[in-house]
Amino acid sequence: MQADKQLLRIPGPTPIPPSVQRAMSQPMIGHRGQEMKELINTVKEKLKPIFGTQEDVLIYTASGTAALETAVINAVQPGDEVLIIVTGAFGDRFTKICDEYHMKVHKYEVTWGEGAEPEQLAVLLQKLPNVKAVFATFCETSTAVLNPIKELAKVVHRESDALFIVDGVSCIGGTETKMDEWGLDIVVTGSQKAMMLPAGLAFIAASNRAWKVIEANPHARFYLDMRKYRDKLQKDSTPFTPAVSLLQGLKQALALMDAEGLHSIYERHETMKVMTRAAFKALSIPLLTADVHASPTVTAVKPDDFAAEELRKVVKTNFGLTLAGGQQHLKGQIFRIGHMGYCSPADILQVIGIIEIGLQQIGKTIDLGLGVKAAQTAYLEMKL
Image (cartoon, rainbow, N blue to C red; front, side, top):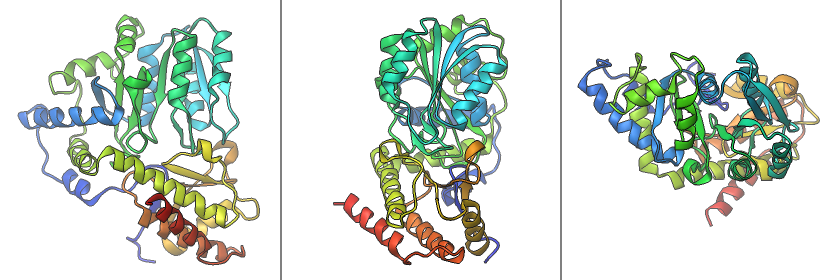
C-alpha cells in the first residue's frame, strides 16, 4: 500500500476538497485588516442558509465540544433544571457538561441505536414544569441515528417554555436544517464534518427568543461569551484571534456548497445513505439503526458473526481505509462508515468493494460483488 494513499471514511474529521486545501495555503493576512473584514462579511452571510436561519451564525475558533459548552453556559445557569435527550455518546456529553456547571439534570435515555420519540418527550416534559432548556443531538454520531428534531421541537414548545438546543455537529451541511421554521433556539456545529474543513471552527446560531435568555443570564463566561461574538460579527470581526487559514478555507468550502446547491447536497447524502444500507442488507450483515432513524451522514454496522475490529484492521492494513469503531459500551461491537461532506456515491462503491474483500480475508463467506451490486442498484433507483 502506498503510504500517502489513505481513504478516510470516518464520521469526522472528513476529507478536505483540494480547492479548500489550496485556499488554506494562501499567504497569511492580518486578522484585523480590511481583507479579514471582507472575508468575514462573505462567510457570515453564506452560513445562514445552511442553518436555515436569518439570524447571525457566530464563528468560534474552537472544537465542536466547545460549541456544546458555549450553548450550555450562555443559555442556562447553575441550579437550572434541564432535560437532556441521550441517544448516544454525544447526548451523554451534554449531560457531562451540564453536570460540571451544576445544572439540575434530567435525562430522557433512549436505547443506543434508536431515535427519540416525540410523545415520550411530551410525557417527560409534563412532569418537569420547571425545565429551562431541552438539549438534543440531531445526528448521534456514535450510533448513526438521526433524531426527529423538527417533531421534537414541536413538542418542546407545546409542552414547555424551555429553550430547545440542538447539537448538529455531524449533520449540519449534510442534512436539511430549518432552524427558524422548526423553532430551534440554539444550533451548533463544527467545521470537520459535512462542512468539509479541518477541525478548529465552531458555528453557533441563536433565535431571538434565545438571545433574550442569553442577555439576561448572569452566569460568568469569557472566551465562550456569545454576546462578544455577536457584537464583533456585526462589525465583520471576531473578539479574539481567529483561525485565519481555516476561515480562508471556509470561504471556499461555502463556495463549493453554494455551487452544488443545498438541495443537491442533501440529495447526495441521502443517496449515499441508501446505497450503504442496501449493501449491508444484501450481505446479510445487521445494521445498528432502523431505516426510519438512519442518518444520511454516517452508517453504523453491528455484525453478529465476525469481529468488527478485525475487519477495521484488515481494510486499514491492506487498503488504507479507515473506518470508525464503536464508543463506550458499543466499543468492539460496531463499525461506522462516514459518508458526509467531500464524499460521493463513487466513494461508497469503492468502500463497499474494499469491505467485501476484507470480509473474505477475515474468513466470512460472501459472494463478492453482492454488496456493490446492491449499492449500484440503489443508486440507479434513487436517480429514477
